[in-house]
Amino acid sequence: MSKSRTLPYVDYMNLHNEVTGSGNILIVNFPNKVTRKILIDYGMFQEKQYEDLNQISNETNLEDIDYVFVTHNHLDHVGKLPLLTKNGYSGKVYCTEITKKAIHISLMNTVKIISNNKNEKPIYSKQDVNALISRLTVINYNETLKLDEYVSVTLLSNSHLGGACMVFLSISYDGMQDRNYLFTGDYKHTNRFYKVPKIPGWVFNKKINAIITESTYGYQKSFEIKRNFRDDLEKLLLDDTINTIFIASISQERPLSIFRELYLLQKNNILDEDVEIFYDSPLGIKYYEDIYTKYADFVIPKNLIFLNKKTHDELVLDIQEKPYKKRIVIAASGMLDHGRARDFLKLFIEDSSKAFFITCFTPEGTLANEILNNQSSTIKIDGIIYNICAKFFSTSQFSQHDFSDDLIRFFKKFLFVDNIFINHGSNYAKQCLFEEIKKDEHFKNINVEIMSRDKFIRINSKNEIKIFNSKFNKNSNTNLKRKKQKREKIYSLSKIYR
Ligand SMILES: [Zn+2]
Image (cartoon, rainbow, N blue to C red):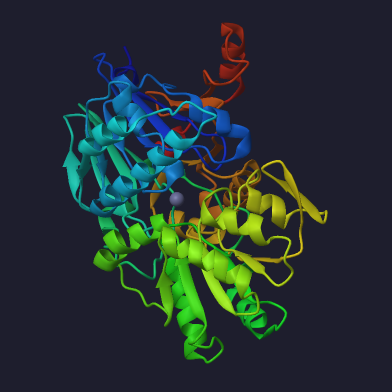
């Protein structure tokens, strides 16, 4: 038997197709019949065309999983985690300290929302969420934890969000150089509000078998981003025909960027300090109180007023009764799909004295995306047709993701990389990032693959890549097709191993 046959092989697959519903599974099969099944993130789908997948409660034999790691607390990365405990997972779920606290807030909010949805049976209950929360276990950044004789993990800093991390997995086996896999999660290299420890130098010197990277903004370069928020807001503030300005914001962290912009507008005497700024997001206020005041470093504008249920109703009345008054209202959700931002939209979309500012990434199928790309003067929301009279603005400047040039700069820091697998982006974004990497001389010996839910990658014992249809691929049921697929793509990485 050749030596390579005595080494493990690894199967890697995605549970998601495009941006949301993040889920990564790595299955390591050792020659001694031991296996390790590792799950990284388990999130909800937010794109309309994949929403049905949220109803699948056991898509990968969750009870078989050995280890679970969470990169950060965004719903598309954590929203389905309670299904683990519901389906018999009894291990730990590893994350950072801030993520642990933030998951508690977000999942308690999510279970409330899904329990109130009369059209669908909730996929999990408050008990399932409590069981999951009891499994959350903190690992400090840069501390390597040996989970057993085969698997070690290090959580590395990631500025995508307070508490976000990248997951660096090391697989050990007798007589084999460690095999290392880096999962970026959603990634950004800077964060204005949190101090994160630097990634230690040894990480860049390791041989990395695969970087599994996100690609949300893979279609854009950092210098292409228009920083238009302050300028557009200034125009709206000077425009006498506009009174209330609604800023739609995701609940987490984005408000800190908006607060800072408003603070600077006040400082530059563009925004009058007498103009009231309402923060109308119960979930956002919870993050503010429990997370930001403890861990983040930020500024707030003068005259910032936090609303509760009663004061929200009073604000709605005030806007209706005193329409001439200038005000700024910050509300969630950022994609206008639910929450008070959606309520305000339905109340005031037909009012030409109102403006709405969209400040987050809007995947296809979300209401914000529909409005921003709408060619007609009307839009249907919850079965009612509205005339679009309010003004709409948007910006990508607050993106918490790296752009393609940032990502490429980041990958270049790693000295020995075999493969880059691209996931977590629209099909277009994944393709753009793929092409950007392929045309860069630096990556000429590196194998690059675009991932989706339809396929999985096997890195065999000789460290070759083979691609198969996954069980989620509609055409994957015949052995014949598998064999054909097998023949289609085999890349030898032997030259990299010299
Ligand atoms: Zn995220």
